[in-house]
Image (tube, rainbow, N blue to C red):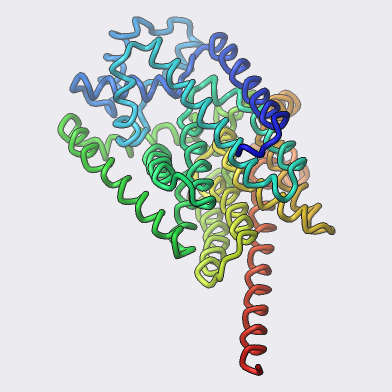
Length: 449
């Protein structure tokens, strides 16, 4: 880290500062200020006050009593009712946020935004440290684009900023074999906050074997230690929290609601905070969960099995570790509910992309172009422009031919992420085969000698 050029560090810090400042300004001008963190904060406040955070009526009562706010204007009220008072966060998330919930809203949400800013900035610096030995210029450009386009993350205060940042920090600790216990703690907190962001990265550690498997198991054990007191606390306050959480998730994922991946979702109406999972593409052709979920699970399942088998059979070079993480960081976004701020996990694709670039040739260029495209189509400013250009396009009413012609324009993020995952998986598989051939050749030469 000490060998990084000051100008590179300055540019990363500047890019992060742009997002933080813009996000705070958006936060103050939007109808639901720091909406995602409000749901977590007041959910934890419910538990502290022995109220059920997963019961919308209890949640709303605590929120109204403590914040003194309840929007009266129809537009603001509709936004509020969809974005805030239904708690869909895991109990472990509420448990980890509980110390901040002991504070009043003002200092609590400021500290939360500082934690997100520090986490995502540290992750960017460490991702650059991992990639700079291969292609520092390419890595710096991609990372700065990612960091300069996190405005929505800071505007809504989503836990993805902390979960993704801590996951990347953990990977750096494990690969560099420095501060490994700090890495174990970071990964455990990340898993407790958002397991669908860092879960497949943890799976790589488990399948890779050796020291990485040991770190993965240690992180899992620590996550379980978080979960045991959490479940005891939440179950004592809200005995039926599991069923209520499922009901809340079903409610916000219902047809046309805020977490519906279909074309009629309110997330699609002039918003940059769109859903980027693969369901949002397949649902454009048939808006039926019984159709698009099996299709997506099949595609992602096949890719995951190939990736997992390759990892189990690996002898493991550093370069192939980066290809594995590049593929899985993109695949993590496709199978389940994710938004653009979750895609900052692509920081883990930067070392693999830089490694390919250093190899030269067409494959290196394609690898960089794909990660660059994935970075851009999940970036807030390009998404804002795209939402303005496509807001009058109603994919749900288009005939099949027009859907096929416009789907890449209206749903670019999932398709590009799928290409990134497939490409780096192919590089990963071919790299393992190449390593295996070299290993067999060396054994044969040793036997002849």
